[in-house]
Amino acid sequence: MAFSFLYESLAQNGENRGLFIDSTMALLPILTYPDRRLHTVAKPVAAVDARIHQLVQDMLETMYDANGIGLAASQVDVHERVIVIDVSQERNQALVLVNPELVWTSPETHLNEEGCLSVPGIYDGVTRHNAVHVRAQDHQGQSRVIEAQELLAVCIQHEMDHLMGKVFVEYLSPLKRNRIKTKMLKAQREDSR
Ligand code: NI
Image (tube, rainbow, N blue to C red; front, side):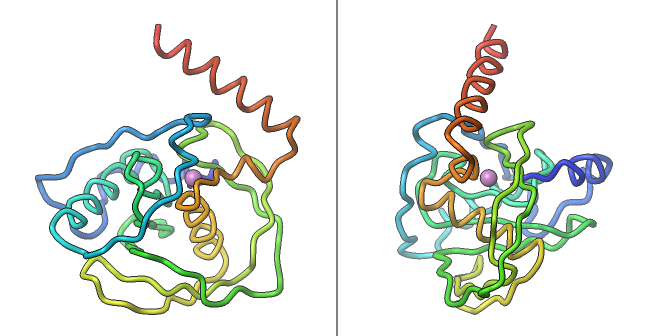
């Protein structure tokens, strides 16, 4: 997930990385809408083992490098239920959610301006629950419930949609979505020249 205002304010903060940082990390290519692979439904993680540790580290590196506040494994073409998030201004509060499940959503909702690392440069409103409780395993496989509100709650909902194969532009009208699709395809053609 990406926010226009965060893109600007976090651009100078690239050196300040979050948890689990070591020299074996690698940047992963991020799939871009309308890549069909973004619509793959992710499978549960069977065990939080060394392979998942490496995936989490690489996803964090990729998210921080792109100045994003959240990244789902689906976006790096790994279709397993893993999310990394850091909504802190300081970029030092990494949150890892493995096999996340919503256990409660607030009845109150609000319209929120969202962006996505898979839909660069596009920002639009999506209605989200104000608060959510999510049960997930952490990077060590420990299960806990996180009570989230405001930006973190929005980010969790956005990233969990990715695991279900859903990109935020699918909440927009077909007209808007088609415009975005055309714009993305044009940008990708120009990039590949
Ligand atoms: Ni996204």
